[in-house]
Image (cartoon, rainbow, N blue to C red; front, side):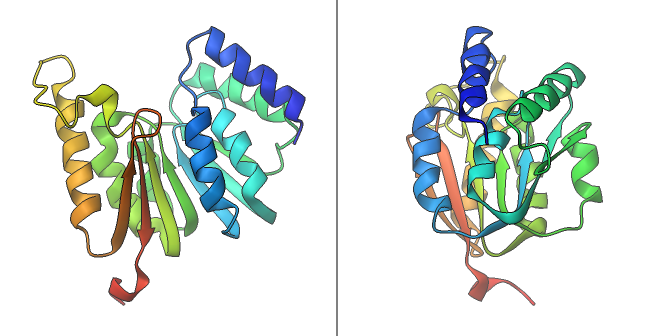
Length: 201
């Protein structure tokens, strides 16, 4: 990976107010992902490709990342950024809405990273549970959503997103298949490990 290119991609995204994974979130994941042998990663929400590029550092030699993005302009920029970072062999971008694309996926993944439309997190989780390997992890960013999720927030503007994030958090905490931590890192980070002893055969 070209680290100098990565720095420039990060700087440009911050200048243009494009949401990218925060440094403290990456540092938290760094500790976990270094101990895993990631062969296949799925990312829901590519944006400009920054997080996918960062995740290539944790891939096994022949590891791959599939990432989904519905905004065509972002995909064009992400492809350029991935090329600049010299990791185009490792990242495959799927252009389209994750709601349409996820049901078509059959491969299993060692890590699934959710960072897309907040109101769709329960749907993303349903497919993440189907697609995750035993011993894998499902990571979701921004799950506390500016503090709204854990407060009595009920304003109309973000009501659906907040309600669905609450549903998502309830599911990851109560699902016997998952061992979940929710960390006050960035805008809230959930890390759910698959407890394979509870998986139905």
